[in-house]
Length: 186
Image (cartoon, rainbow, N blue to C red):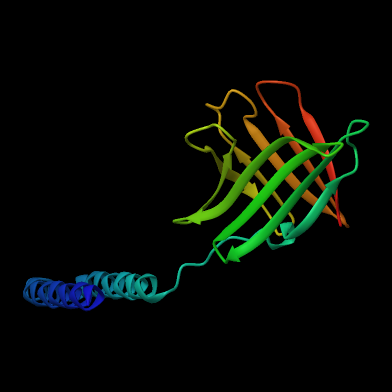
């Protein structure tokens, strides 16, 4: 409905401009008609470009489908096991669970959501006891990697994930020591 309104307003405006240009052209001499033709062509090319943008579907950036599955950290401290599990909920939402075990005890846990908001990928990290998640914006991403950042966060300020072969290399950095996590798919 709105697109029809926009198009009819554009057509009305275009008709108005053409009538105005027609009146103006009476005052031009022959050598200035080239300028008039150029102006008309510019108007129609702009209109055509606008129509393409109105009907063209939004294209999204690469999705982190490669995260899906269960991953175990290979460079853990002795007597500690760290895991991440990622599930694709939709084309615009991935949910993750990260947890560390020492023996039979869970010693840390976090929930993560990677989601597309407008045209920007985001990562929200939910820690137990926190009322709101810590939000990070994707600043770089490819088919097999991403970097997300939040300069206001105490630590980390930057999270990076890269898939190489069957291993995910994840780092957290900024505001403290850089920590490397190496994960392999279970």
